[in-house]
Image (cartoon, rainbow, N blue to C red; front, side, top):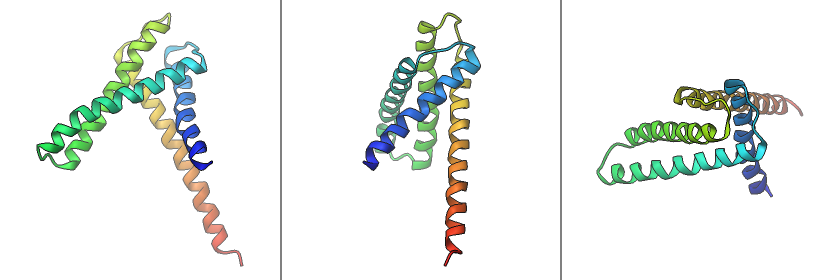
Length: 133
């Protein structure tokens, strides 16, 4: 049950954040199912491209921190490219790579904000719980 709930949160949170970011940046509304498909396709493409670079770098003896940094950059660029390509097909107003990257930056910022709020709530709850008899 916990795995199902975690999977739903992992899939639904970026989808909702993507819809709100597209509405804010491109001033257009997209459906939930289209945003779900774009987010999933972006993650699959980013994972595949990162693996395609990380495996040869690992086998060549590159330090792990360098592989991680390169992986983050490739993931960000590939996901932004997928957003750019699919949104240019689906939206009336065309966007550029900067706007696609801006959508992703907004999604990341909102996700970090949500995680920080949840961490503070859980931390306060545990702090208060530690003082109850």
